[in-house]
Length: 387
Image (cartoon, rainbow, N blue to C red; front, side, top):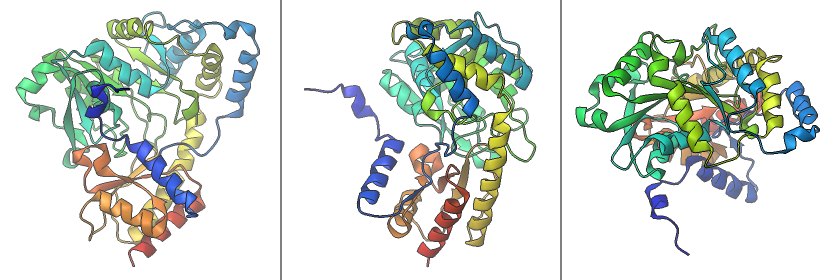
């Protein structure tokens, strides 16, 4: 058989490679500590699980769902956005459920890109921002996140011809992998840029609920004019420990939401309604649960940053997300060689910054989704590997 040539355009998927290396080491008897994948190690709240079980026992949820989502789900998303961000959303036209942020982001490429167009994608960034356009037969143009600007792109540096061809602009704050938050005035500049170039802003809001030191991440849609040019993809995966549930929503510009929904009606049959009803419990009764998780991750952030500083790795403490973005120690040619070193010498998996884009070179990412004692052991093993 012959696979599609479009797959040849893709590099190996980062997390699939990490899983392969972890399994290989464990088969060899190595006690691997994986800090490479951001998958919460604590369970989904019991009340959400109970809500799923109760809804799944109702035969009415066993039939095909609607791609538009149950009215209860869309109302819960609207209520949450009003409470958390001060953003008013119309449940009838500005909210549609998505099977996780990854699915939504990929399908937006199919909905908005053609062969001669492109998406502007944060670099470093979630691999789907660049892989999705390629699979859709279009192109991805990387926008380097500039450390001196607070890990945001310099929109004024985008070449005119690239901006002319752009249909989508992918952004993500709080940011994966850098942990950066959007500086004051940045979202306003994004709205201006989108108006200037008639493109759709896609803001991946997967980490807005995990913030530290009193910081509260805003919604892009709270920015004046944002709804005219953008959508936001809001996910329950990280804040409510629901990565396996695949539950998210696309919200914002009603025309863009309708375009996404039109595509979805031809691709899948929607989200299991019992999952939607469980999400209603998460967004309502347990809307403040992510604050508990933020306290946990803030403690782990401090443990890791303190330990890294003791071994001579200077890090800027993130104000959000579940990651620490750290510079590669001196003596290593690049991030990949450092990550290979700690895997072979210490049995620790961390992600090389270059895997998230060329602008990520010189950094590595640590995920905070393992217990405190294993985090400390991992950093100690790194220290020992340095001699």
